[in-house]
Length: 350
Image (tube, rainbow, N blue to C red):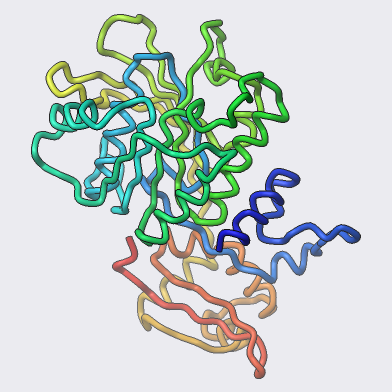
């Protein structure tokens, strides 16, 4: 496993899209559009719906703003599986690398925030190796011991960067985040990487992330926590990512528990248009629960005016929508008898 992960990380630094297909020194591994549509890719569910997705995410803000308290809050909610700010949370084991704290401070922080209501699946460490050393292997080992791990928090990025690599350069920053992103692509977990913002102000708060633009560019997205006034309990959390809509959350910090509470949310609502084919598949599976057969048979059962291979392509591309919007598990298989389709209605799919 260690050698395999090392190879994947090396590939990631060269080309972030190559983690599942190591680069051939002589030939490009190109696929045609038809071959691409012939594949189906399982979409990983969010850790927190609409908020925390699988992948590598930067969480930046000015020092002493309350980032670590918010990280602990997210970690606790995921470890207990309790909804946060009205967002649905999927329970999973959490590893929080609180590398700027000690155990005494963590104990005091947790008690102030949550009292004695412990989260058995929240694990904390105050020391780790660096990316130059064995950090990736340490995280992989933890995941092997806890297979349901869904979230790891690194607080902070500076603590795990290669020693002597303090000089900002696009290549160095891209390599650093690239290694962490390769780990999340390989494991399917979410990695929150706490970082600082620079003092120079900008109309675009994401441009205030310390370092070069590679830190944000190589990651899957970023969270920026900022205040209009340094004093006071109000703050704004801005969110931007490849696979999620841009959001702005207005927060207020509880003076007693220091827990962040949401007061207002702004988001660009993007509702995908209705898909009559998916609607028919959903109606069919709701009635029969489970079916398996050839694409030709499925076209007839659904009374669709389309070629069987086009139906397969359509369902391959929309596998994620079928699962998330309709609770339908879809699988396309090649057998000695030809292509087979399986659909299962799973109303308990979280």
